[in-house]
Length: 561
Ligand code: SF4
Ligand code: SF4
Image (cartoon, rainbow, N blue to C red; front, side):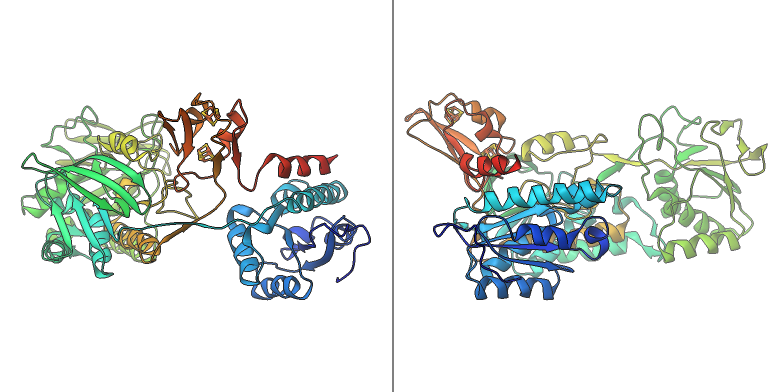
């Protein structure tokens, strides 16, 4: 709809409003044509359109065309979450010649159609209120310029297991200089101790040695063994770090990005099921015996989920089922007469190749028994007794070897690294990504990435692809001439700041510093994420958040009435 709104005052900006159906996601539950009609009556609105999918190619070109044909000075899109779609819409405004910061988004999907699905009328009324508020705010928006800063074209990888090596290899392959810090005396991580890799049945040592060779001989990768990262300062594009080398020296480097690939360690089942490292061993110890060709047992019972999915460690380590089945197959291949039983709660053999390995194992005569976690198996005198959940009776198996499948757990130094880099860990001390689906290899802190078992137990394939993935995320930053970041940051008025440092205390990104000479605080624009904590805290109202200044928010609030 292209119209001249009689309510528009001459000095008011020309606002275009786009209402998105999101297929039936929004239009199925609230009255989108009615909201569009209503938007056209709002002061300042000169153009409205209802789109089936505003984020589709067609929807975006409609917005661009409307900006150009109607001289729009503000654009409001009422659709889904700004978290996922704001960058697309605001950059599209920029492409059509409108300053991207003159765009305002209203979320009528999450806040209206989804939560008021059962009440179309009220959902529609709420959407009209939100659109009216968005239009009021948009008229008070100010054009902004993105913030530009320099970049150092190198990266630090912390950890030299398969994930870290893959990240380093990939970064160097893209032409970046890499520093790799490994705590241990050798590269390779857990893979050095493994026998064969399932389901492909590859030799673990050969596999990792090929990768280690390529990294060790790469002139663009500097490897520090027995090294510890001591301090990390700075911010995305310009991190300053110091490492303690095995010679006890401190070396300093400047890097643009960091990759955390510190891995995880197999948990030792001390005190469980009579674990003694001889008759009752861990799955990792079985690997080593198989690797050393030092395994002859005829009756083997493996118990899954030992120390996992319980009150101490609630998570599933994901890799133990594959490891157990792979090792059971190897035992059967080595001695077809051997009797192998796997006692499980659920088999996590996700993916077609792993599923196939499970079928192959069954066909080889490996026995699988489900046990009830409320009545855990009992290991005594070379006998494993358990309640078979499906058969509904107790079963006893003779075993000359019991193998306990234990989870990978976070490394002891994960808390120290987390504090040093100011990145979070979860309740199990694994590093926590910014968003499990949208940013699975990113931290919320810009320029720092995570991969492999440091994040969550990963198979070798997963660790390798995550390492490569983290390198690609680094490349999206370091392959630019300069860093461009959002202008939506806080600004402190030096004339009115009294230097109380209240804003520093509430900034979760340590983006505010104190200038003792001037006795005032100031914001680091690159570190600031525009959360607004400081603006709402400052007692002298010296902090304002661009794009969310009092006059902009008050206009929005007044329009709610
Ligand atoms: Fe200055 Fe306000 Fe920060 Fe206090 S809270 S230091 S007055 S900007
Ligand atoms: Fe820190 Fe948030 Fe203020 Fe930025 S807006 S300086 S991130 S408190």
